[in-house]
Length: 82
Image 1: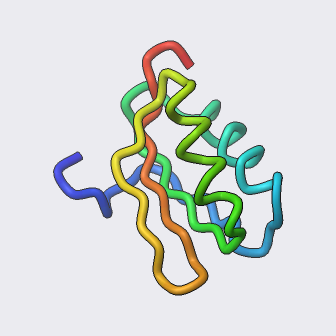
Image 2: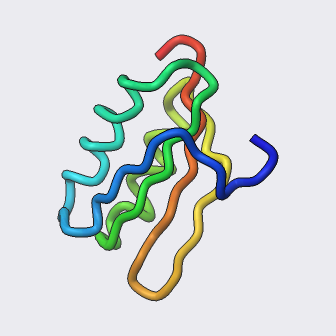
Image 3: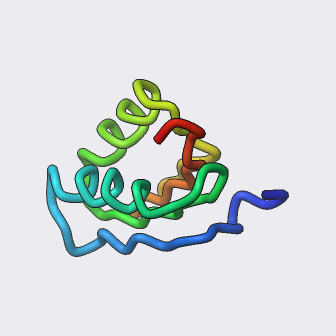
């Protein structure tokens, strides 16, 4: 993807609290093909720590993570294995 705002699937987890944004992210990644991008929107502050840490330990890649007020956005590329 040439632009980090491009994505194949959107997960709106803004109404969910910890640990649901991370769990829903894991489930959504399972539905994507390798190389596709998941964009996650969350309002839970714990996601700012949890989602990047999970990605570090996985085969996936975090393209971008941004914070806008109390909303957090993540662009994740699904890895080849998962």
